[in-house]
Length: 147
Image 1 (cartoon, rainbow, N blue to C red):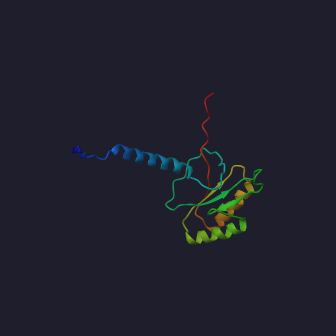
Image 2 (image 1 turned 90 degrees about the horizontal axis):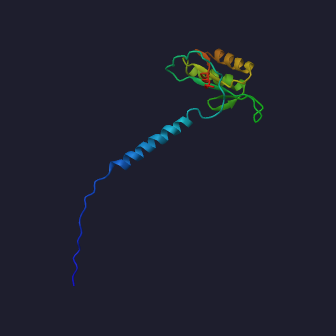
Image 3 (image 1 turned 120 degrees about the vertical axis):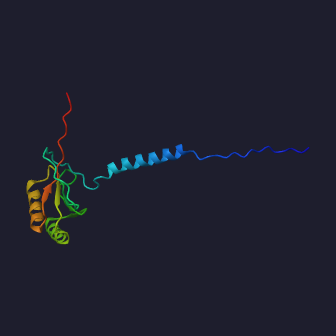
């Protein structure tokens, strides 16, 4: 006895919904990941200020970060170009950076508990190096919650 096969050829079209779902999930993942990568490196608490923000410069500013001493780190640290340095090395690095790019601004991101004298010393070094403007980074004040 001979059996015949009954085969049907089904032409399947690719479904776009799974592709759109994967694309949206990737987009969501990258958006969330970028929120965490905005300011990598040293964790500092910027001081609050309600002052107006300064307009953006056409050139990216150089950033100097100053940490406050804590129980874990009993010393204040200065970071420039993601490298920890002391005031003498910072002075030479600022001079070299100012010579390389004469019209750049300098922003000091100092922890609100960092010593005032250290911040003033760093500002003085940046001004002597020849930067157009030396600014201190702040954050807008937190909105108090309703009682």
